[in-house]
Amino acid sequence: MTDRIYARIAGTGSYLPAQVVTNDELAKRVETSDEWIRTRTGIRQRHVAAEGETTVDLAYQASLRALEAAGTTPEEIDLIILGTTTPDLIFPSSACLLQHRLGANGCPAFDVNAACSGFVYALTVADKFIRSGAAKTVLVVGAETLTRMLDWTDRSTCVLFGDGAGAVVLKADSETGILSTHLHADGGKKELLWNPVGVSAGFKPEEHNAGVRVLMTGNEVFKHAVKALDSVVEETLEANGLDRHEIDWLIPHQANLRIIEATAKRLDMPMERVIVTVDKHGNTSSGSVPLALDEAVRSGKVQRGQLLLLEAFGGGFTWGSALLRY
Image 1: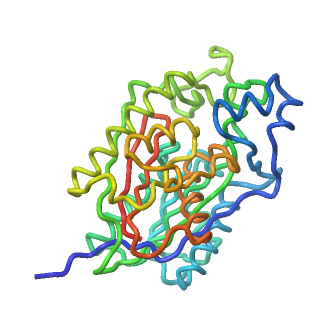
Image 2: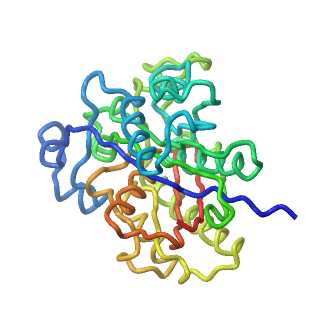
């Protein structure tokens, strides 16, 4: 009987642009205040990509750090999956551009667009490749330059988002790794959180009073996110026969502190066991979960052998979770 193969996180990495925009600085551009933003979102600042700095630039730096942490060279990579909703180009994919820059030419490389759930979706795909034996070493990245599609006069969205990237190197392992992943989507709610610009649909921005920017109905998104994340947490625990108190760390998508607190309450988990970076990074979409994971690992909070629950919710709607033994 063949031993079961797991996808183990061998190394993590992240990267944030140098430019930091505080709430007070935003208050000079739009009618808002530090107090208004913090009490509603938990965000204090966000990083913004410099002019000419692209999603692939951020992904490249995060990938180098993950590869170094894993003791892995680009030549060892069997597959690259990049979660993003802000690719450098329509095509080729940002994963292909990243592959070339890393010097990992020859292996398959592709993007996954599931908005803020992009990293969890990409991690799930990578896990399937490793479990099937089709790959042994996979680079999974979540990277965004979401501030490029913000309307900086719309305080309902411009205060929320930031730029950044996170990456993990997954390796085949017989001992430990990703235990299960769970993905969902509901395209019927698309207009509650979307960017209505596209190639094929022939969209005219002036008809929606919108350019290339994020449109969101915040209160509705909040309600759907809390409900969906509650459900996927329960699904994950049930699938693995676990009690919620067995989870060592919750590493959630960093969109809003109130959503994070609601999920922690559902798990009956104290906030001391929840990784929170939303105050420093804002919502970095698909970069959010791997950024938080890398910070937790490098700070020494997350230790080998601990049980981690990763979860995310994003436009689409999309949502998902990953349970893993680090």
